Amino acid sequence: MAFRQTVSLHRTLTSLLLPSNSTTFVANYSSKSNLYHVKVGIPEFLNGIGNGVEMYAEKLETEFGDLQNLLVARSMKLKKINIGGDPKVCKHRKLILKYAHKYRLGLWRPRVEPPKANK
Image (cartoon, rainbow, N blue to C red; front, side, top):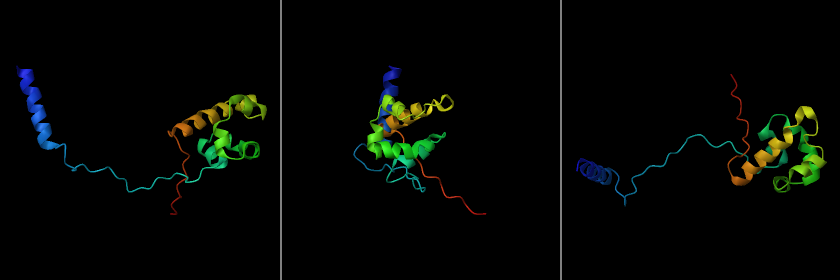
């Protein structure tokens, strides 16, 4: 019995405070602009990944041409053009593939470096 009263009280309060047909909700806006590239190419994509992957920008540009071709590339294709072939940098191929997958899904975009404030 007490549970029913609690539930009905909760429903009543919710309907009073948040009317369903009203547009009283305020969106959460930020005053800061997003620092994302509008046009993302292979160099911007690799700079966004970081970790030394940007050293392959020229090689990937000549091989794939644009970012869309890089996004559908497989590991063996990257291995054939010697991306991440050195044992010291063996994770570079994995990083490129991981971030390419995130980019395709819309979960990640390369950020622009914010301008430094002069003191």
